Length: 206
Image 1: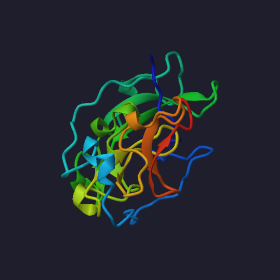
Image 2: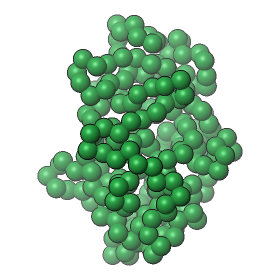
Image 3: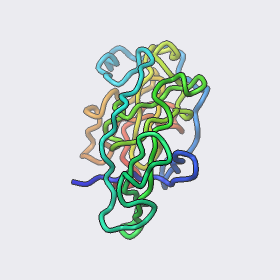
Image 4: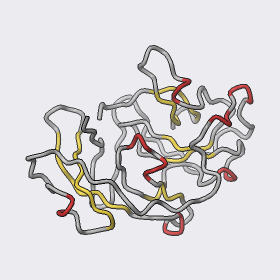
């Protein structure tokens, strides 16, 4: 099944706008609760937390563009203005609102991000070939930045770009497997309004 990223591109690598029902509030410098997570929730099950800074894998899978759609690019060969250029199929939420655009990696390590984490695509496997980029939206870079000791990867499709956030003592979930309310709110991610991790649903089907 072909998957497409939902975002609004600008001359910068990308800007991801929150859809209806999702928060666009940024939470930088808000590290969440000062206390450690409830041990009964077994936060050690979280395999996405960032113990130390790591360099990104320099390889990138081929892009998945809409075929026969001459909009921005047609193949990866058209995307030669940056590193690891890929022609990616994009959608805005309606079946007719689709187009292709070039996507580029903008970092390979934290060294390029002025104190922020370089969010590597392999840390966010459900983001479907997202470019490596500097995470300026999240509130932590590595585990030691967080009172809880856990700086974890969050991505809820259509709501916000991939980012790292501290775990808190008020979190409702640790992983997607904890989110079982009939299948709607099936993603465990950071809620920028509630300032904690909750079970959510993707804002736009991608």
